[in-house]
Image (cartoon, rainbow, N blue to C red; front, side, top):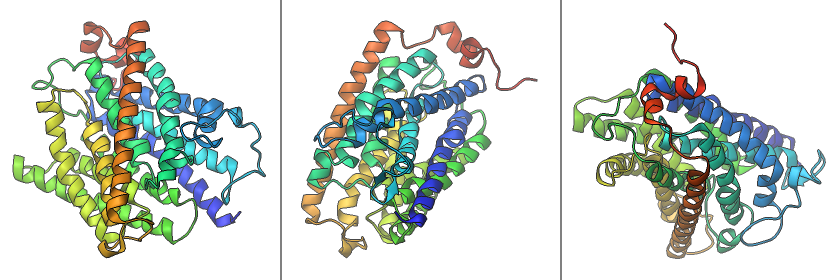
Length: 401
């Protein structure tokens, strides 16, 4: 084990946890009505705690133990057999466990953006826990746990499929089954606090250095390049989103700039270990354009109230990044040339991954959501939604005059 590697992954673990607590919570919290800010914070906080326990009990074992092609085994439940002397690659296994736990925390927390302002708190907990076991753990095993997609040669450095497509598809399914907020799409209130959105987005940006750079699992040049391309993509996507918004609506908004940054960060995630700076510029540009367009398509054409644009930003961004990894990862396009097959064959593998993960997440999320709907229920009452979830569900106010 190399001490520098361990120190970097410990640091990255803290950075990735910072993305959820409080980064994502503040980002989402600023986007909703003032009467729902606390409910968003509670959702993110509770999911972080629940995911930590699920990861300890069985999530880590199902994701990273055993040699099955589709799911791990239960040989490491409650970290059985893991001590300070056991290793995962060149890292202490408890360090690797904690680093991967932060990914298991943020992925279901990202889905929160789809169902804000109208979902039962009990439904949030049940869906999140079951989803981690039935969707997140198998997909993680397929790609990062030496499962069948890994054996095919899939390239997903830090979670374009495992995190972003997974949460995007789940968001779309839950939002569709839950139904739209009152007044959607013409009379939905604007974000109540863009300043909080900015603070949350910038914390996510900094935390993403641990998310992508830490996925190198070493303190080396690969981690440095991953951080470099992550930053470049976010910067380009921010300027692109801002430019489109400015030209289309006459004013560049802070919320738009922040959303563009997240789109660039999500899209570079799967490619961050394979592309160079030129690829990062292309990815950031396309992320800003395509994710921006998809926000309108999902809300206005598909009529799905994915309230905080989880699918448009994360799901679409994840797919875009996964597919662009094939050409932009090649040396002739400025990439690192880590693929052992042709661009065409790598693209086919990437596409198979998109289809497989998308279908699995769609079907299983639908089953989980239907089960919860038939038992504890999904949606709060009309009166509770009108009042706001802060007081009607949690008995508190975000702002006391």
